[in-house]
Image 1 (cartoon, rainbow, N blue to C red):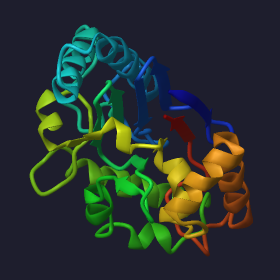
Image 2 (spheres, rainbow, N blue to C red):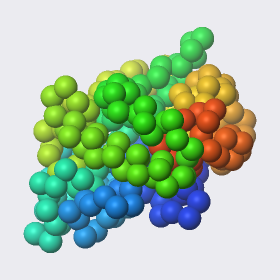
Image 3 (spheres, helix red, strand yellow):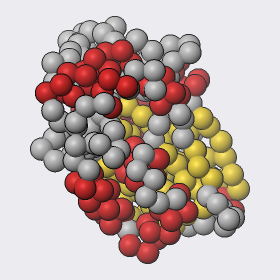
Image 4 (cartoon, rainbow, N blue to C red):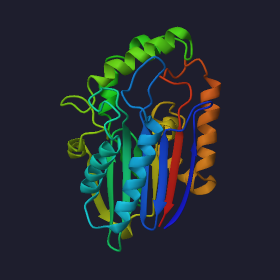
Length: 271
């Protein structure tokens, strides 16, 4: 397995994404940040959560003894214990993250996707297999109008985004809403999981939504073009292309969005 990855924080921010690899194992997490003026109930923060959960996942996946879902559930429980009573884990804004897990054996490539980060699998067909969970986007469509009507970064937009996040918290890890890794291991039951014959997979790409927005928000590339670009130019080039697009529409009028810039992470595996 040959791997290249790049990760870049949104300008002026702490990177709340996490990416790591080990032999035949890859993980990517995208932490859900807390906007200015909103509370989380946690003294550690989202970046701590992503890094701690991700590190546990890589170590456990490398041992290979459990299913990916079981591994994630155990890691969520373990991280909840590490808060050590200092945090309010019942708070609706407690740190959370999307998760992609990929593990390859001689015969099988296993994957798990929880929430809206995107996994691409190049199976040598006309189009790649695209695995992502759009439930958060479907819920969010109910609440985006006020935020999207305002110039990104303006005081009114910042306030509207805070209101949007507060509204979305009411649907997090609930039936009829969307599911992420946070404190409840039962959320893992909602993950997308699967496996394909290892021999069928030429390459895989793991993308946080800050990297996938080139396709799914900006519409400036297809998934196949993204895979081709990762193969030819590497993940750093993809992120640079995303940043250029963001800068070309800094006020969000062409592509309304919650954040002008987002943490962006891309990992490309060639088998």
